[in-house]
Image (tube, rainbow, N blue to C red):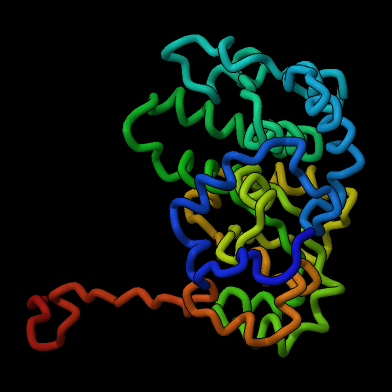
Length: 287
């Protein structure tokens, strides 16, 4: 794994925020995965062997199916009929249209690691499609389910650490409470975030979903499948976390100054409260 901020020599500090860097990361492929990366802890045992087959020339859907670890089959993207929604096709056929490359590779690995949760997300998407169809806007449930699927990170922190993270008190969370991180369990989930992390850069940000302390690691998939309700998702109970800020996940964050970059570790935005006209005392409507 590379050292430092993830910046090339001579690169400006904000260069990783540009579209060019994002395009560059998309040029990476399955053979470029660094399986020693800490965010892939727990994924290597399954993923590395499949990645080696793909690197040797095996078509990605075939290599994924040969593992036999998912409750669905992976089929070429061309199997998705024109005009049919991706999630609706998966729900109807138990098959996942799969392109070559990192994005769909990590999606498939997530089906293997979180089979009940992935089935639940697909069910939620298909139910919304059946109810409202496919339009220009997904709607609150489908939108939140997509955010979760692409970008979630599960976290089981102590209360004080969770409060600091969700309040964007970054120095408190990462420096003052640094001793809390070794006892905080983390599970990566979002396949789009994992795709980006193949070429790490400082501004990669995931969406945290809190796991209660009573949930055992062996039960995480079953618990999460139950926790993902349409009502909860529609309220979008996410909170952002810059991935490379996790202590032990990037060498440069040993220096507290790493967290002083406000373009990445941003203060929490406070939404202005709007008052209804009759909330102002002098124009309260008569009884």
